[in-house]
Image (cartoon, rainbow, N blue to C red; front, side, top):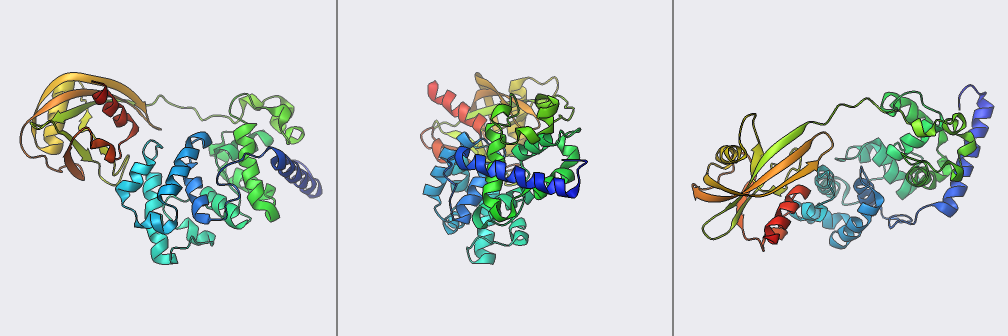
Length: 363
């Protein structure tokens, strides 16, 4: 789509639009939020789909709408209830932001999801792509999108000679030029489907692609080499000592993380980072004293498990511990509770901690 006259470019854009929309008519995915008129439900789906695959999202989306069928129901819910419904979906700031934004909409928009782009962009957790996705799907507004799937499709279409991160303005401009303005809803859904089903990161199904003849990467035979990747450095790896502390009544101590930051508002088994040269038991004893102000005896090893986040990896080294003295204090957390193993399912935990719970039940 370069080095052409304006007329040729316009004709090519019309052709690309029609080819994609015709393909979508017969090959588009049947998803529960498609043909959904309620902006609230579309918003929920768009947030859940951020950095998460459709097959993972669908059961969460369906359960979420049973629990919080309307925007007002979400706004009225307790944050802990919201985080429990989000448990296991990851990137928990998305769930917190949904809840915060629902409260804001009730307060500032009478509980009606706004239809103005400026108002939508003011909501927590919503950027340009998400706003475009919601407003085009809910109101057919001619707003472009640029999620990971779309970046990949466009980078291959023009054989982008650099990583997409270095060409964001160029890709936004291209997404806007290509958009079928009178059919923005269908076009945006179609280009996402194209990236998700055919123009995949590995082994793209070019022979089935409606844009094959126009795709510069395909015509140059470099589709598997694009998009270009940024050079990456190895992920930092942290080792964490974790305590499953029992009191004389057999209850287990859990604490709730501070609202802001990674996994904010979720419950966990207390612990912290193992310092260089420190043993796991020494780390656990020190961390529990620093974070909760209590004395414990570190007992046998329960489980070690690995977990990966976006920017780092962790290994949790989990030990049984016995409470010796002191009343747990909220020195570095929001709240602490003694709970039984039967009660523990009421609380939202990060994914790695749910594996610890499973190990406790298996004993």
